[in-house]
Image 1 (cartoon, rainbow, N blue to C red):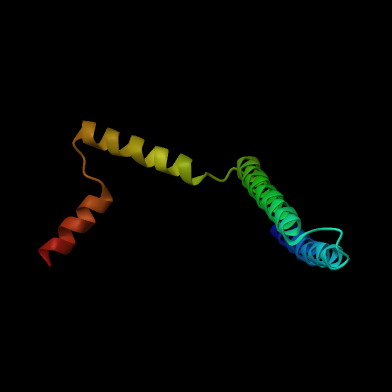
Image 2 (cartoon, rainbow, N blue to C red):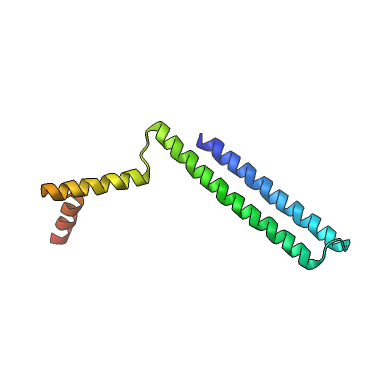
Length: 112
């Protein structure tokens, strides 16, 4: 599954780069024909880049959501879930007066 995601991402990236280059060339041609001023061309390119950046952020968020969904479906714990469980275990260990393995490892390393 991750291979498909990687290939799809690379395909989208290639299309975006190609589209950007073609767009910049078209804007340059319009400037050369005096259909756009340099300032207008800069504004158009800036708007294009801004929209591209916001789309990238949107795609990144969708990708993260897909990964979370896939992790949930396959039963893989997320980093947040693991951190939450560690915190709960630490609280329980404190209540029981038991030290964690990490504490024991650190204590034995300090003795050496």
